[in-house]
Amino acid sequence: MSRITVLGIESSCDDTSAAVIQDGFLRSNVVAGQKVHEAYGGVVPELASRAHQQNIIPVVDAALKQAGIGVADLSAVAFTRGPGLMGSLLVGTSFAKGLARAKGIPLVEVNHLQAHILAHFIEVESEAHVSPCFPFLCLLVSGGNSQIVLVRDYHDMEVIGQTIDDAAGEAFDKCAKVMGLPYPGGPWIDRLAAQGNPKAFQFSKPHIAGYDYSFSGLKTSFLYKLRDALVENPNFIEENKTDLCASLQKTIVDILMDKLKKAAKDLGIREVAVAGGVSANSGLRTAFEEYAQRYRWNIHIPKFAYTTDNAAMIAMSGYFKAINHDYIGMDAVPFSKTRF
Amino acid sequence: MNVLVNNPSDLQKAAETFLHQYPDARVVAFHGSMGAGKTTLIKAICQQLGVNDVVNSPTFALVNEYTCPNGQSVYHFDFYRINKLEEVYDMGYEEYIESGQYCFMEWPERIESLLPDNCIHIHIEETNNNQRIIRSID
Image 1 (cartoon, one colour):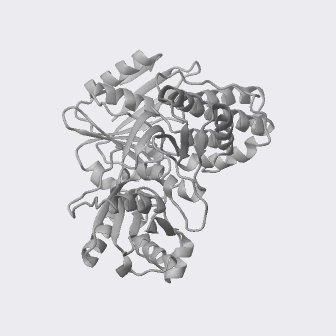
Image 2 (tube, chains in turn yellow, brown):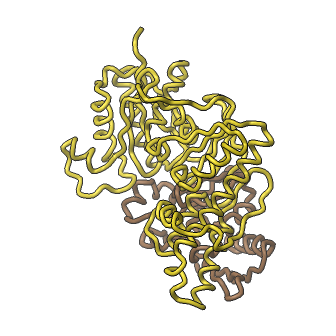
Image 3 (cartoon, helix red, strand yellow):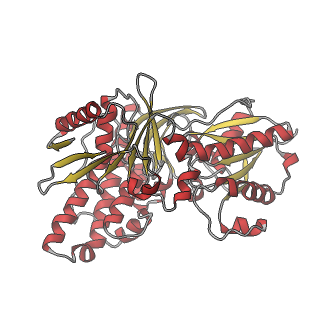
């Protein structure tokens, strides 16, 4: 039987990435960076975010080489059609179309948000892996998303809750900025929180109906707490940094877990996954493990490389469509608006 | 406009006042420090425009897109993460700005030199007792 080899291309926001999935196994996953350009022989003094046009050829080239295949081996090309930035999406879409036409292979469209969830199915040959069973709940948390998604099948997903203002990752980053930490501040808060007391400070939690989230109020409450305390003591942040980080992290994690728990209970689902960059947060990981014990959840936490924007998840999603011959025509245009 | 906002219903009124005073405004820059309520005000204006989509912060996405019942689009920008002006060109800024659709922008200071001449500027200031003053400059 001939092999099914899918090239995935991701260019929806900041990073350009390409990956190869062969017969369901990941062969390569390359994200644009200085090293890729060096290997390709290009001289790139400084890599700007969203310079997709500059990045796409070296990145695809590196992904094919790392997979040990040539363009002629590809069975299909998968690309992120949206949501994302129109200018960025157009680069990946046009490249994918050009390649598909030149090689006479089918084109597969992928929804970026669904791909974040299908990242749970990425397998590397000879590594043990347990994929979630349908139906499962997935908490998608990143700098731009905070959603609870009910996943019934590879291509049947429903957003049952989402943020009505800021994303969880944004709450981390913006509060970090207020404390003078570098961007992105989430990982810094995580590190400092490990040495602090999570019960030292109380910050306001939202009261929102259903499974929706809100983090804007927490950001403001954090800002006011610091502003008032700094009047009394100009060294307040320095003296309390670890406690502030620990308390903030606990509040954000509690907010995320409360709604997820409610959804799991209401729907009677114990198969629970997390996706997106914030899944690297150790507070959230610990909470997932505690909930797994307490509520007998089967939890799924992906490898970090598959949680931030990457093409492995696009290739994986593309593979599931390619095996069903679910292709798209050359007239497909990208979409910027959020949709599942 | 020059409006004092004490509560959410004042905010809806401020949004109404804005649309009444500037019926033809398409490119609008919202100035204010973190937590001032830029996203919240834009949410209120979108509500007045009849937008049914979820209006949330575009800090990570750089731009969110919503649709009005009359088919007009609303592009909701956040330039907080922009470091260099060429990044704005890469995201297709000109196409958005020249589209004739609503372009509501947070952190416009980061791309000041690229703002069009007909841009309306809205400033949100916080008072000492956590009220907001919303002022327009055109």
